[in-house]
Image (cartoon, rainbow, N blue to C red; front, side, top):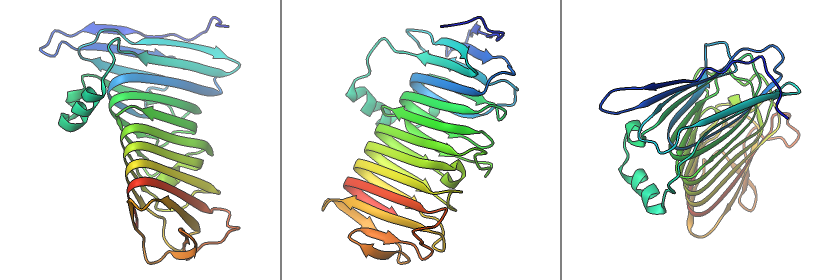
Amino acid sequence: MFKELNISICLVICMVLSTDAQILRHFEVAEQDDIDLVSLNFSSYKGVSHINRSYHGVPLYVDAELGKVNILPSFTHDLVDGVLHAKLEHKNVESESLSKNLSYRLFSSSDDDYDHKWDVGLDPNYLYDLHFQFGIGKARLDFSNLPVSNCIVKTASADVFLDYANQVANSVNMDTLSVAINMGSVYANDMQFSNARLLMFDVNYGSVNLSFNDTMAGVSRIHTMVGAGSVKIKLPPKNLPYLVKIKSTAMCRTKLPFSLKKIDDKTYVSKGYSKDAENLMTFLIDVSVGSVSLE
C-alpha cells in the first residue's frame, strides 16, 4: 500500500542540442528523518554505471546521460515502516542477441561505446540494501564510507568493478555480497573492507579477480564459481587465518603459493590458520574449465 510521503522527487528532463543528442535525467529523493533502511532496486539494460558516495545529503541522487533510447527510465518509491523502497528501471524494448553481446565485448574499448551513463549517489547517513541488474556495459561500485547491509549484483555481459578506494571499512556487518555474471569479469579489490559474512562470485564465462589485504572482522566465507575462465585471488598475508578448498577438473590449471599447507585433497591452510579463529576466512573455489591462480 502506497502512502503519501513528505518526500520530493526532482525529475529533470533536458534535451541537449548536440551532435550526441543526449537526454539528461535526474532522480532524487529528498532527506527524510524516519528512514531506517534504503532498499534500492536499480536496473539498466545497457550503459556505464557509477555507484558511490554522494555529497548531496539525500538518500538517493541519480544523474543519467542517455544516448539513443527507445524507452525512458521509470522511477518509483514509497516509504513503509521505516524502509524506503526505491526502484529505478531502464528497459530496452528490443532484445539484445548473443551476437550483439559478443560484439560489444570484442569491439567496445571505452565507456562511450555503451550509449548511456549513470551516476548513482548514496549517502553515508543511511543504511542500504542494494540490488543491481546490469545488461551490457560496465558497473563501477565504490562503497567507501557507505554502510551496506546487503548487495546483490546480476549482469548479462557487463563487467563489474568493486572497490573501497578510500580504504574505509563498512561501518556495519554485511550479510551477503553477491555478484553473478553470465559473460564478463568481476574485479574486486580490498574486499576485507566489506565486512561481509558471505561473498559469492559466480561467472559462467569470464574471470573473477579478487584481492584481500587483511581478513574480515568476523568469520567469513568466499565462494567463487566459474564455468569457463579464470580465478585469480590475492590472498591475505600468510600469518592470518584462512582455509582454501578447490574443486576443479582435469581441464583446470592450478597455481598456489608455497606458503599454503595441504591438509586434505585440494584443501589448504595458511600458516596462521586456526579452525577456532574469530576472523577465519574460508575460500571455496570451483572452476570447470580454465585456471586458478592464488598469490
